[in-house]
Image (cartoon, rainbow, N blue to C red; front, side, top):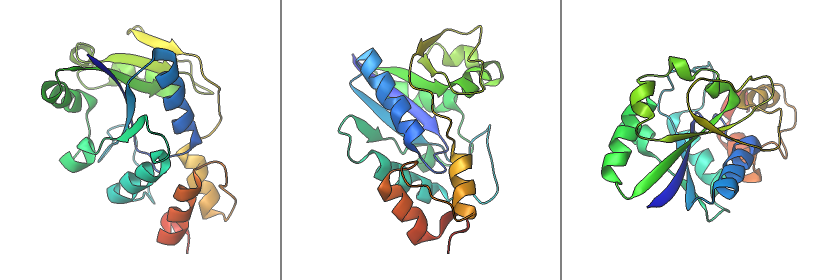
Length: 190
């Protein structure tokens, strides 16, 4: 069985916190690879001034290009609509029966697991791996393997706000992502 980590999210935009989280889980569990899976329309988060799904997919691709263990998983964006992890994993596990999936979530999502769509059925398809985040309890009654990783107080919201107020995002996102944001005029840049 191939052991595959899946890191889903809006990636609006992807930042170094996402990369560190994926790398820490990859290393701690000895995974074969980690796939970054931007969602089409997230059920938990929607903000104004979002980048398009295509922009988020491209930024994610740019952010992971230099790591041979990271792959882009376009499944949810290609499927369109609201992205429910259960529906995605039902289809992925059916199409890849030789893989064992480890779904990577941050502490904020651990705190919300009891609100996830068909969570009990989802637990039959994946193993949850959690990484604590600042200001989250990272507590749940559901089985989640917690991985110790450096805590970085960074979010996509912070990156967007910095772009909108003409502050630096250097070192918060990969250089290629920063260039893409500037070139495409995302998040209020011109």
